[in-house]
Each structure stands twice: as structure tokens, then as C-alpha cells.
Amino acid sequence: MEYQNIKPITIIRWLARITAAFFFIFILAFAIEQKVDPFSMGSHELTLTISFSVMWLGFIIAIFREGVGGLLIIAGILSFYLFSFIFSGFLPQGLPLFVLISPGVLFTIVWLHDKYGNNRSLAKI
Image (cartoon, rainbow, N blue to C red; front, side):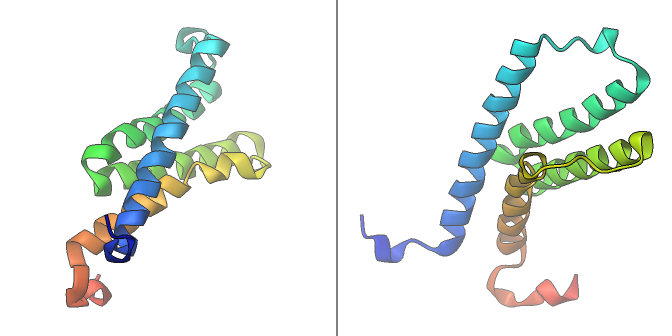
């Protein structure tokens, strides 16, 4: 295989898939280890869990539908930040939580490239 023929968008696509798979497995393992029980949560915790679940679902969907999954990842993490701010008055601290949005951004870039490609009609959005 010649590495000179690999397109940058292919690298971005695989980077998005690998990071999404890693985050999916990591979050699943964390949820199992912590024995997350949505029936014992209050309304604030349940709202944050639903936002986080939208992001987690986006990791799965993005493997098959990059645009929908990428936008779900972005919407899930941004709604998590929004609800966290509404409930507590401040945003969650730390980089690790915000890093979870990176596969969503990468999947969205790939989707936009596939949709608009080389015809430069991206400026019409």
C-alpha cells in the first residue's frame, strides 16, 4: 500500500472512528463499573444522564451515518454543558469532558466533505 495516495479526509475519518470507539467503550465500562441506575436519580442527574446518553448514542450512529452521529455527539455534549450550567450556575471544569466532542467535530467535517466535496458549494450553507 502506498502511503502517498492516502487522502487527508481518510485519516480524519479513521481518527474519528477510532476515538469514537474508544470513548464508547470507556463510557460503557465506566457506567457498568459505577452501576448507573437511572431509576434512583433525581431530575437534575437524570437530565444530565440523558444528555450524556445522546452523545453516547451518537458514537454508535456515527459509524454508519457520520453526519447524524457527529451532530448527536456535539448536541449531547453541548446540552450536557448547558444543563450543568443551568442546574449549578457554572460549567463543568476540566479538559477531559470537553475532549469527548472531538469525534463529533471530526465526523461532521467528514460528512460536510462528503456532501459538498470539491465543488466548493460549502460557502452556500
